[in-house]
Length: 188
Image 1 (cartoon, rainbow, N blue to C red):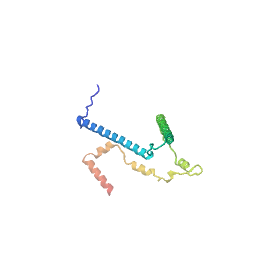
Image 2 (image 1 turned 45 degrees about the vertical axis):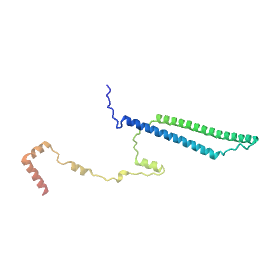
Image 3 (image 1 turned 45 degrees about the horizontal axis):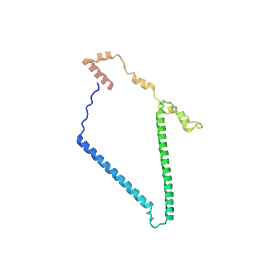
Image 4 (image 1 turned 180 degrees about the vertical axis):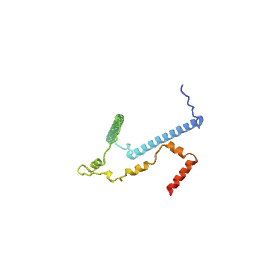
């Protein structure tokens, strides 16, 4: 049987949540409307700057025809630029998708090799660093202190007898007296 997970009670009531959501939606809607208005104003400003007003009332028919031809030529140039920009953007998005696919493929196929411990001597490290021309041998063990084995053996060979005999001999008051006498004898 699946266990029932107790639902955590929210600190905010349902009506409060609904009110907050509606406020968020309202502020988002206002921000979107304001953004659209700003874009329209920017577009109008750009058009005012780049396109001067045309006074056609005092023009003759031939002047109007040449004006129309000039406007069509400008429209063609703008359309060509827009088409080129759209083609570049489309090409870039395709290239980005292809590269993302390649990255995913590479990530999935690549396995990290398990690393092995490699023992390299100091001479081999020096040879790899300095090259094969320089022959430097380094005896690291020559600089180490030598320890005499006799000193360590003497420390280890302290009276190791049967511990049961030692416990029986040292038990009671007689054993304490023997220990005290032995300690006094060593000090003198």
